[in-house]
Image (tube, rainbow, N blue to C red; front, side, top):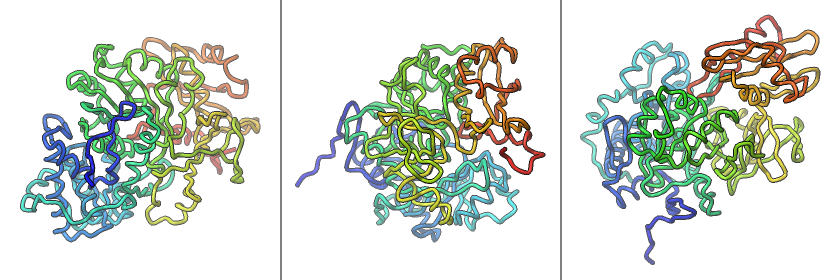
Length: 527
């Protein structure tokens, strides 16, 4: 029986249902559209035929270096076409890619390489001093990216004999490590296909890929969002534009000059693009969809983004442990002032959500507890940490550590990280709620709320405020603005004005860094 390889257009989406591993993705598009552009990075362009051939050579080079199935291969470098060639080479050899955050210190990088048992490291020369400064020895084989083509040049460009299945481990990404040592989250091929297939099964265009799409990747590849977005576009056969590192001015230029049609960013990146000097709606005329996530977004920023970018917006929510997105707020729900604008979204087809109390009992709609997600894209495990895996992955459910609730229609509302909840006189206060209201004040550019010790109430609310350009409200102004908008026990007891909010490379606020100095003299970090 003859099988058609024609793409399926479902609700505007480009979907190849026969693909379930990246090995198949590389082979399929190299055969179907060899001359089509797969990757653009700076002034370099890689076709799908190039991507397939180059990753084949790298795969054979990995095998010649003695790597076997399950061995870890690390990448320490900025975004580049080589990153994706290495990703596909790992897929074709059943080795596991370990992308390393290049902003980390030598001891932090050392932990990742040691914890993962990395046998081979691809290293960009810029970051050689980090490896040289590690307290441990580097892996047995280090390949500099400047020499990668020479290293693999003598290898054949034919495919390897290995053919992955959806459960074959593909990547091991390390959590941000804002508390304790980072954990290695192992993701299989299925993590990068399951959501796509769920959307296609119900013909939903919440997130879609179309012929001719050119996709900007603003999120780094060592973050699950960046890796997921790249693989979705490769699976669809569209073009990926990789930024070496995000810079707002460059991102705006790329969108305008290359005719970018889709982008995946975190809210902080949206804010930076909007305040870029000289930026206007004309810079974004080719954008048809912006996918955002990774941290909460204020309604004020979202409404400004909708007005200036003038395209469809889709919010995604998930964790590295869920294989990136598990919940989506679709474009149709992005109505300024609408009832769902504070929601993280609705689970995709095939994904379930529930909220539980501290005894593990499922809570009814409206009740705040821990959000749990059941998704076919979920992680395999935390590498080498069976006890921690068992705590987070329970009967197929990922326990997110996020506090939130479901409404009657199954939409997920996130109130904060459970560990960041503030207990004021026995009442739980969730920072995101206060931040969202504060950022509607015209004098507030950004706000972050933490809990600090209070002898009378146990804890009280302290707000860090970045003033809007050309304005600086007084604490009294902000208090007056919040009265009537928030319950009295949620109002900040104190304010601190600053020009900088610390964030990790994925755009998440380092709330613990802001909070710690208030608790340094306390035996416990909560009251």
